[in-house]
Length: 216
Image 1 (cartoon, rainbow, N blue to C red):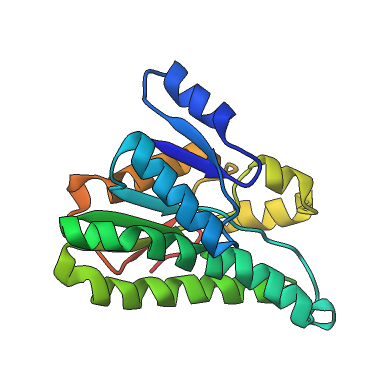
Image 2: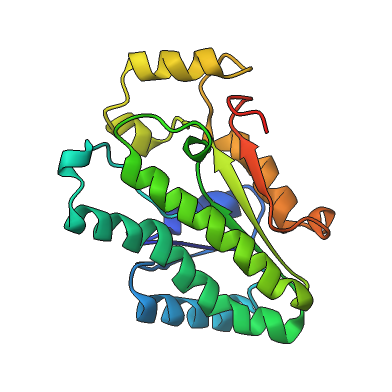
């Protein structure tokens, strides 16, 4: 398994190895297309062909529409949308040649239940869902699966640093079927399913993993 992050991912890779898995960490800025291509080549050289890709880089800044100017939008789209495009373009040629591959894009349950102050973020996640559906049509003939996982508000270190107060958490919990805060571990099973042979006939889908906040 390869783990990449703009700040490096060796700690995550080490945790996977400590649990008995095989992993290596790589440094990559997904907003830089050339860097993504280099990282994909490094992964292939070190670990072999890339069978699955999970696009999980993203940011979720709160801002009213008056503060959502062109520079704000560009920064957010470069990370949340362009980053996924760059990573997919880097792995698809090999996946096509081998006629196999799993691509999992991470969107957000906010696309279905959008809160205020996140219009730019929700727009990026809508773009990810639309991109996924179109790519699934394009790549299906090569037996490449392309799906989306849409998490709810998840108690990650990044969320802990963001201005999500108790009032927002209370609203989220009230809307969920499960009355607890979502944890990163709650997403693992869905991601593993979408990357495994168990999902070989599942593509173009958005799977909510949000404790039942959205019902579709």
